[in-house]
Length: 243
Image 1: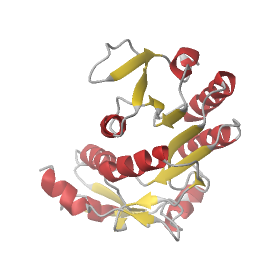
Image 2 (image 1 turned 60 degrees about the horizontal axis):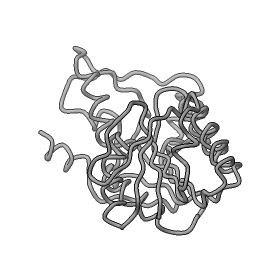
Image 3 (image 1 turned 180 degrees about the vertical axis):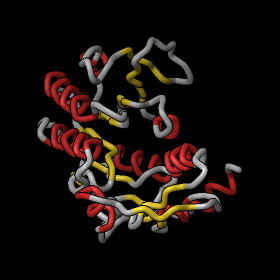
C-alpha cells in the first residue's frame, strides 16, 4: 500500500507513520518545508492551503491519511485535497481525523472540520472519517496557559473527555488498512470531566457560559454520542506519566 500522510510531522503523525511502516506500507509525508528522506519515509514539499505540490505528493498513491489541521483553514485544506485527489485519479481510500461535534458545535473551527469532511466525502474517493475528542496533550497545553492566571475561570457546564493520541493513532492506522467505512463511531477518552477537574488543584471562579456556544457546551454537543468507542488511558494516568 502506498500511503500519503498529511500532518505526518505533527503529534498524531509521529505516532501513525511508524505504524504504517511496520505494516509494510510505503509512506510519503506532505511537508510545508523541504526535508530529507529518513527512516524509510519520503517527504514531499507542498502546502494544502495554497494547493501546491499536491499532484507530486499524490502520484502513485492509493491511500491518503489526512491528519493535517490548524487553527484556521481546515476547510480550505480539505477542498484542495479533494480536488487534487479527483485529478490524480488513483486514490482508492482517504481517511480523515476530525473532531467530535464537527456538525453540532457553533464554532468556526468545528465548522471548518465539518466542511473538510464534506469536501472529502464529495470528492468521489471512497472515504472514512474518525471524529476524536481533544487529545490529552492539547488539554494539558490549554490548562498550562490558564495556569498563569491568579484565579482560574471555571465555565459552568464545560466538559471534556480527553483521549490518548496513541489510541487515536492505533484506530486511524487500523482504518487506513481496512476498507472505506464512511463516518465511523466517535473515539473519546474513558471519562467525562468537568473543566475544573482537569486542572491541578487551584483557586477557581465559577463563570457562566453565555449565548449559543455556551448552550452547545452545556448540552454536551462536544461529547461523544451513543455507540462511541472509549479509550482506556485516563487523564490521571497521562498526568502521572508526564509530571
